[in-house]
Length: 274
Image (tube, rainbow, N blue to C red; front, top):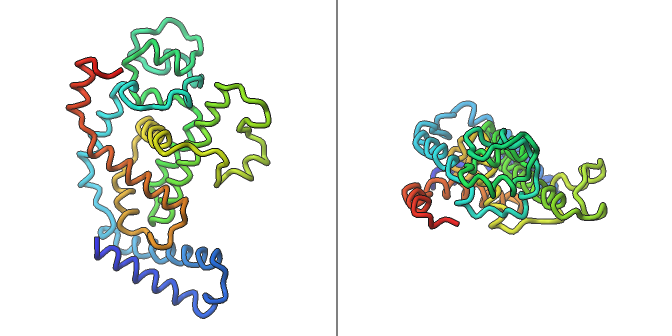
């Protein structure tokens, strides 16, 4: 809203004043760091004193109830990039879905094998078992606990990195790539790739996996997170990676709100979903 952006603008003005005359002598990186540090501190203080101005959890109750219904929809209904998760062996068969009609034994099976035998496995149950996306799910959960949009965006950013790494970890397991191209867990790899990835998923694959990861988690109030970030993030000062995180979290919240459950049920019942 206009009032929210005016608040952000005034907060940024205060940040510039706190930096003082040294601002002109700083590099662009130093300017960005100083502004973000001051913005976080000031916003946290405002959030502490005037919390009711920033959040309204009651208005999201119906939306969150809808999430539970979406999470129970069969995974096959969604455009999931199966090549990025299909060969993962997260759990034993009977731990993927206690309601499966195809449980035969407790032998570990791949996601692809299970999906081929259990067409009714929900997207929530499916993604809950994929261990490579656990860190991403934790980052999404943590985002709702942040008291300022910068830290919330950082959590979304880390969730996207976790999804990206998890997808390529699954893909590498499936493709049996050589040691030079595999995503490894070595110390050097962790130090180098914590915040930037050499291999990036396309937006459609990333969004589909983000939706699945979210629905497979405990489904935190992503509507609150998206609303706070959309209203109060200093958009003119965000880095490209935070802009990407902003686009994804807004897209996720919007997709869940606009998801047509009646149409979905009708298509499933008519057998139009393949």
